[in-house]
Length: 255
Image 1 (cartoon, rainbow, N blue to C red):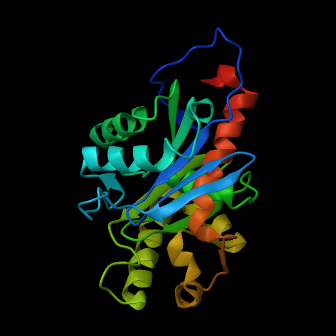
Image 2: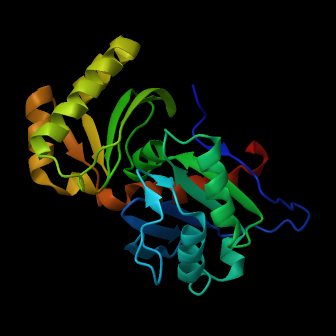
């Protein structure tokens, strides 16, 4: 099982004893969002490189590092003072490998932080939904080009399936829901008893796809279970990253 917050430090200086506010970032395929504790959502814009109009993130992964760095730098250096950029917590898909993680760290390093930490997007979304995570929880994070289905228990990841499909793809909502249900069936084989408990409790739906009522209805009908969209589901992941950031302030020795 993975810990809730998997951190990787770029630079760290504890000698000053300062307690930075920090910055949470969700660099998605369709939109980029940034949040600072105490101020809320600062940025919510299309993930698109200035000038070229190209999208530097595809299926949740950075495919144009310079374009992504330019986007992040342009958006945040002017809006977020350096004091608030000392610690950055960024969401990252479950499918990310070390290459993608390296790309993300390089992009965020342009902001000049002392520390960069990453948190799995699906865990961040569950945190941002403000639900009880002590009991088994089934989360479907439905984005523009990527869907993650994960079972959490006690804040830990018990199992997951990822689909390189989302609400921006040219498929019907019916087909998308069928693929999600099939991934849940596969997950049942890995985490049987806990999956049953989680389904009895209901499914948490996050991401921009949770704003589409027909998807909630179709998924609930096919599963025969309650499906509950998170409050402001499109921003759940960046909210959760901000909560994780606050946790690092309270327990700095944990990382």
